[in-house]
Image 1 (spheres, helix red, strand yellow):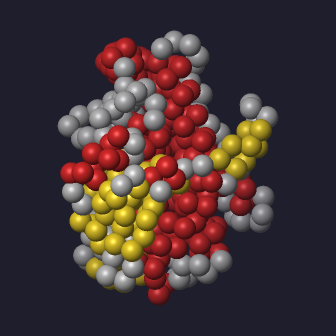
Image 2: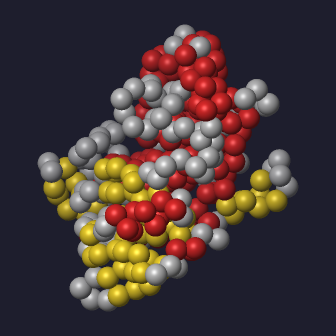
Image 3: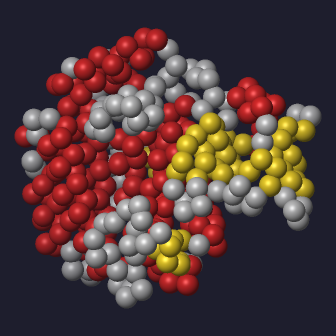
Length: 330
């Protein structure tokens, strides 16, 4: 199975014969290109056109994050699977308001269902979350009545605000309190973890879209505009609660990340490199871990689940099968 290559060290990366060669001040390393699915770059990297041409031939995406852990861009090789027909179908479902709302509503419904399953999991283990559960359910019931995507986005935002209120009860650690959702910069440690984790998920979904016939520039819940990619943001909404949030709960509960892994910066709180590495390690483990898939009757990895979500969307767009989002068991 191919794996994501995560690069934190500064150095030079280049093609060496039929493999990849990475050199830092301290060591040199050969990396078989057949083992790589995509590359996440957190360090300062020197590369050349020969290297980019090589990974393009191998259909490998390269995602770049800045010093603060924010996603800054992707080297996106020429699409090898995109079809004119699929782009037309995507555009048709975007331009037709009714068709767009059907897909966008499914993304919000899937996200809310997965948030509720996380809430119920901890409620069944003695956490006082009934009021939050009821509030999310009440908002969820309004999804079918939304008239446009702006209304849908507002409902989704309100549900997520309620959901995040559960974090203090679930985590129960005075070093990690939620207070309110803050971004760029995150104002506390928990928000820094959420922002970093969500960035990882956005680019992972982008990598998986590249391996399908779908164009990532045409989203449905998030408005398609001059922003480079939007569909990955849509699909990520479904998986945030069951991938990123669960990782965060585990990292804090097991003291794998502590308050010492953060520092003040940019008027907010920054996750240090050691903390980023710990998060990435758990993220990678989560993606290759498997669960029993109810419909297939066999185990599939979380990474495969995301690809399957995109295949379902493809079938919806070409009229083969109505799209239903993946709902976790907890």
